[in-house]
Length: 512
Image (cartoon, rainbow, N blue to C red; front, side, top):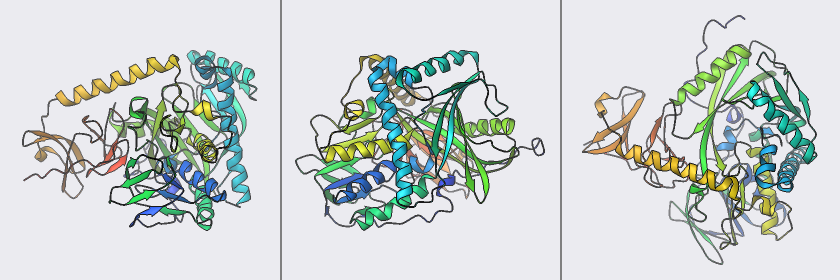
């Protein structure tokens, strides 16, 4: 096709499509101590939806975010609102039983229906459309997995259709369709909800970092600028619980990154939402942009801070897009961070059995639009002491011997390996060896440091030891960040926290 012989240029800086062309509301920083009924940490889909639901019930809510709301994983999603979470139901039946697998489907189906209903009731124009969702096998190895998933659908009463082709020039041996699923624009949807929170008396503060919870009958959240939020209940919806010492979540999850491109294509996109069962994962959907279709191509997941140069993941998606659809223009590139629990079911509920008024919501495994909405619905019911059929399914205190023990051991052995290798790795660079827009681990005064030289030649040097548990960070060339390979904390090139579990920045290092 025309244009396929000349490789298109990837955007220089990673920016998601969702935050472009939308008038985002701005909120002040918390500058004084405050009291409320429920304090919510995290301004993504869970936090905002929970604030909306609780404020509708007459509950006073305060929501804070360490940066700007809607700029975390919710702002970097592929925004599929579906109960088809790749190949999951056969695995759930085997690992946690048929009843809980059915509950997982029902919780996500209800969350999808809630999104549709809310958008309609509040007259939110969020580009919502019904689309069939496909999970497909490109190799014979995964055909049986697709067939097993179909059998799981039949056992659980999930409507599904088995086919052997999809409308793309992609190798497809088998595919499973979940019909009438949903896609939308997550930022338009949530910015349509925010006025309802404010009208009900809710308060939102940005650039307000929660660092610690003082436990008790009336918990208090301490912020990085010394202010206190006193409340009856705390919801930690900050993607990774900032209070992870309550429940040791860092040892019960692993963190992955995945990537996306927003492209205009040579070939007309046929509609639908697609994800490959094979590895490396490939995801496809479209969204409307200025009367044209912008195709969102995702995939390339890996553990945060580990593996090949991060920029190579974008290049792999670019090559795939060129082969399948032909690229006219690459308008956006971005990445997202996702938490994976040991049994692939999110942790939603009391942080521990000993903390009845402190709640967490995490571990959405790349399916945050429905799991995050289900979390908000469940947390509302727990705070209001209402029955909810999904309480035990999502309980953070649950434990399943299989696959729990095996996965916990595997993840923590991986952490130990990277901790040791980071501490004993040799450093062979000095700051003067780092070129413009390059970074590396250097030695300064006998100690390791992370050094980035920006495009203007200015050096930004930080202590390379992660402030969470002391692992050595790695440079992420695709995002220009320092990433921890142990528990997934991420820092800007000058050390500011971008993703937890770390709550303290990397120390700046003086070259003098």
